[in-house]
Length: 102
Image 1 (cartoon, one colour):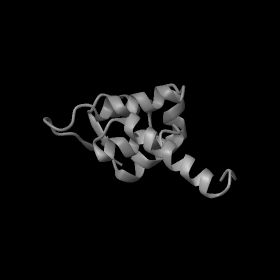
Image 2 (image 1 turned 90 degrees about the horizontal axis):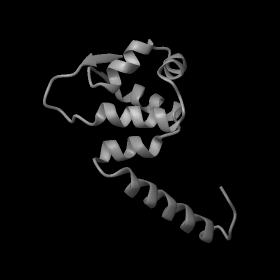
Image 3 (image 1 turned 180 degrees about the horizontal axis):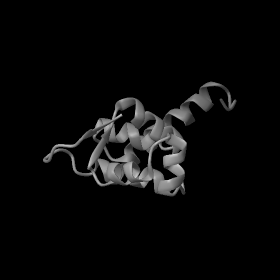
């Protein structure tokens, strides 16, 4: 599930995962329970001492309702750009569908 992180890689990955968790209003304990991992592993991920597999990163994003932040992390762009893009797509889709919400 987790691999040791080598030094010199992107240092903000753990901070991004922490922001995802905090934005969802979850404690480390609550998220750990949802993901079926230990609280100490959540802490180690957020401090860049462990990395997640891609599948586990998706589960983290789903459980924190922060898929936008995961996309931004993967694309190496600011999360506000992704949120703005998603908002624009939603507006276009709503107009195209005649105001129907999907």
